[in-house]
Amino acid sequence: MAWLKLAFSDLTDPESLSQLAVGQVEQHRSRIAGHGTAAASDHATQPALELDRAALRFWTGLAARPR
Image (cartoon, rainbow, N blue to C red; front, side, top):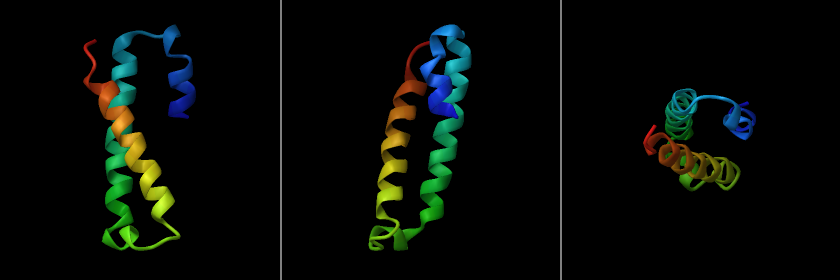
């Protein structure tokens, strides 16, 4: 849902976009922590972990932008 909101972010104010980004940072940090240390060597969960890491980098950068 966050990606859809991002796609239409030009229809909202910068503060709402910043709040969305901050929420996504928290969510992806939590998901990464939930994967645990076993995920690093588990080939079945490795793709999900990498996607969460990439999303975390993206949303962290967006959250850091000036409002």
